[in-house]
Image 1 (tube, rainbow, N blue to C red):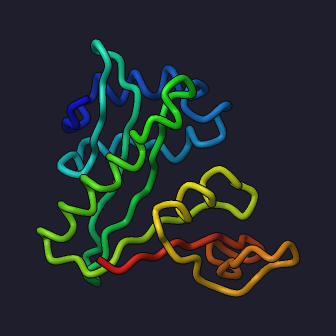
Image 2 (image 1 turned 30 degrees about the vertical axis):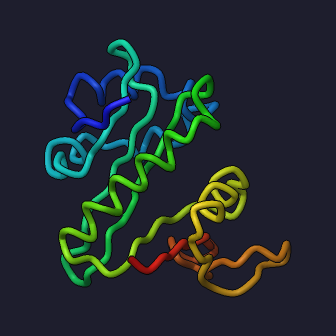
Length: 154
């Protein structure tokens, strides 16, 4: 499958089918249209016969040479096909071309699937182990809001 830039129609399809990507709608507030309108050159989709089956929304830090993956989603029926890894590789290549020296992503300590995925990609988990032994950055998203912060050099 080819990787293309996400269009507004693709974005709307992702929103409509959010549960098929995530199992529920918990990430819906993280899907803001500025990801397509303002960062459209780093918003990517993979389609099968016109249906978005995987996507990655990322951007580049304006303060340091870091590429950040904000969201990556793969429809349940297409998971374990390597689509997420393929999107990450595409974004990493773009980041290298734009002189980024590192890649980052963030998730919650309860998101075991995301933690496993990013570990398979070879990303390091920053921070100190929490009570379950998962490295977290304490208060990353505000008081009491610990996050798993992934980091990989490029």
